[in-house]
Image (tube, rainbow, N blue to C red; front, side):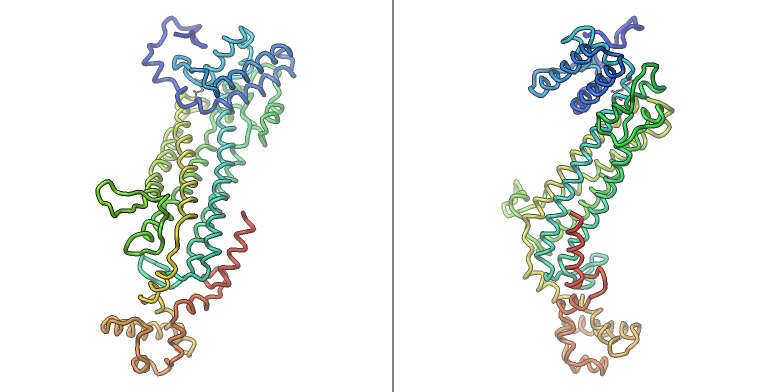
Length: 457
Ligand code: ARG
């Protein structure tokens, strides 16, 4: 077993299974690039501050770069007994360049090192998530552009409510994602902060320059308090929250797609490339991707709750509990990026069954509000109109008809003001067109909405 970096004051070594429990290398190796980037900045600064000679810092930096390359080429096996990415790299460095490698950790601790790695990593990933959200938003806008005139039933309580434009419906998800993007961008303000140089908790006696490492690493700002720098995991909680809410939005969309693609609705047809079959029922084409995304919300929200619980009651400053911040974050990021990519492909390749939708909105009572509005235009108070239309709907149910099938004399019996123009007035497409209020489903309003959306992506 390799000598421990902290072995000096110990008389006994932990057994391998205890080491394995303590170790994080099997997941924090994800941070290798950030760890090396942080170490290079630290070594550069130590040289500028005359803590290291030029030769020493060069040897360290070249050694780190070689380790990074060899790792990515598949030529380095990390050791569990060396606990984590930080100690594995330091050990490898000393093996390669000798004792001078041991000078890298001057004025630094694993506590500010791991915090630096996590800030760099989260920043990189959140930027990629923002880009992935935008790609998906573009797909939604493209589909909306094609379907401003496509009418579908709008629902409340999953009961047909009023006809709406298909574009209007799907643009709702654009706006949810726009807010998600905003949350990620806002979180970046708290992610983009340099903890490096806080050392274990109290700062250091070496003449380090924290502002130089902040600049070298491209952080927008710097922690003002060394204890805060090493114990803050708020930015991970915030990131997990933004991920969880984005996943909730994808899950709501997934639920609609599952319903829309059912035999009962047939509003859309998913492409074969984003569907799966059944091992027993030869006719089946299942929306597995959408179901999986709906299902994966459990794990992302779980990771958020898990970190909340891990942090609750932790005294300052670093505690090993914090090692538990990583797997959840890594998995949540992986889950969201995968879900966004799949969703983009699934929505981009699905067929909207416009003919079926046109037929569907004619076989329901979703134009009942129109009839009430028609009476209001003729001067009847809305409450009264509502009552009259309710009676007409009841008549229709008893006579197995929809509003467009009701003979004019029956209308006249319910109210003399109803005339033959009612048959145009009640057309679903007319109903949609009449909605001119800002942000409404009327074609002009939807076109305006789409043009605003285009300025945001
Ligand atoms: N693997 C540790 C983590 O992820 C690194 C920091 C360890 N620091 C310590 N003082 N034991 O949190």
